[in-house]
Length: 220
Image (cartoon, rainbow, N blue to C red; front, side):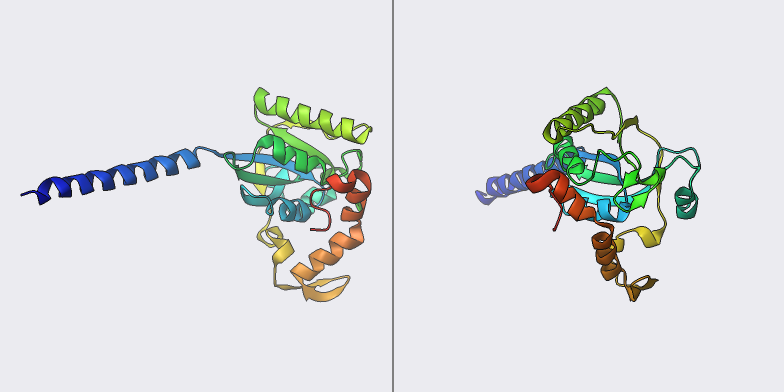
């Protein structure tokens, strides 16, 4: 009969562990948040932020405009008001909004009001989309910090959260795609085309020139 209490103890311990794990999973899920930023070519922003610990996904898309569910051609042609943007989903228990925005500013040229690097036009401008007064305050502090570090005017606007429209499938994870595509560099795999585009566009060179050692993604 002495085994019965032991069995009950074991079962109780198992239930406690299972309950703790379930609670941990629920607590972890509750920490998942999103941030939408525009930093020029969304391939590059997506590639940069998917390297960040605590970021679970980065999705290329469009935000800030008036056209519902726009296409890439519509956005780049102009008139939709949309930015090329990236929706970053992150675990706030592993990486903070402050840290993400610090990295964002130091991965773009926030002094450029006409686009980013070789990509010109309204859809390639920088922007941060915030949801509520709390996020706006964090973004304003990050912008002020970037301006102080640069000693230049930062033109990146902080905008109210807007509908985010996911870009076409072929834009997602373009930087690591293995499909062969026809480019001005010839028919090559997407991953190689992306690297050549990024280098020829001068993105990392300009960010490094502007931010120096603080350029968190340049050359990575």
